[in-house]
Amino acid sequence: MEQHTYQLKGEELTVTIQKPEACEGTRFDRIGWVTQVRLETAGIDFCMPESRTAGQGTGGVGLSGEFGIDKPIGYDDAQVGETFMKLGIGALTKVDGEGYNFARTYPVEMYEVQVEAAPSEIRFTSITPEVHGYAARLTKTLTVERRSLKIRYKLENLGSRRISTNEYVHNFVSVGDYAVGPDYVLNLPYAPETKQIGDGGVEEKLVLSPGRLTWSSEAGGEYYVLYEGFAVGERPYWELIHTPSGAGMRELGDFDASKFAVWGAGHVVAPEVFVDLELAPGEGREWMRVYEFFA
Image (cartoon, rainbow, N blue to C red):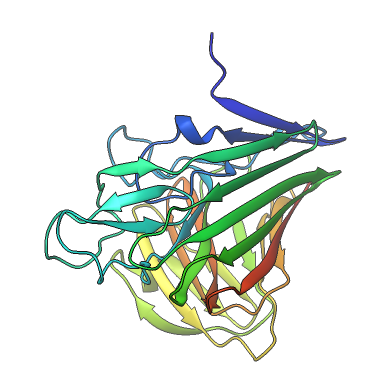
């Protein structure tokens, strides 16, 4: 039987990564897609599906990365029927004159991906063919060390036009499948200010105070909120704790965060830290996300 995943094993963590050719949809980055993290010493899983109902949502599960959710590369340059670049996925076909919609599934020709795998580290490399002057090389290296997962990114502009986009990870997570509610707290290293509230009754579900978010008992159903307030040079960081058990996870990084959002539903929460990417022809950019798990 064909194996559709890779596994990284460390002293305490087991990380499951979907093989690029086994991924579906045209939203989430197919290279280095982490679908489960298990803290073996505590028997706790941290990754959840976007929706528990088959066919609903956009196919997210676990640590689902995405490039260009609101900054698609080359979409406006493409005519209907032509392709544009979706980093980590492939050449997507523009199907009509409407604006880019991240939740829409586009016809796709997947980019070739090179994989170098070892027991505790795996590297993915994808080179995009040139289209309308845009071309790039994306390399992602995932490494497991004790209770940490490190994801190192390298994006190189191989084309003749400037790349202006962003990247984030839609972290579909919980702690041991405990329902998201008053037993959870999301610690933050700064005092965020609400910038944009989406549908879902955020004011009734989330309680914001300096340095932390908590949930009311009304946290079921989908909701979304975008925050601002990062200081210049502030690094991304959030820490999700299930207070009765003391177990949780945190994300750190070595880049300046451009924005921070929280999406969620009753079974899952998704803290999202964005990085802006501006690369002139010939330029490259490296950044890193580190996930730590504890119990």
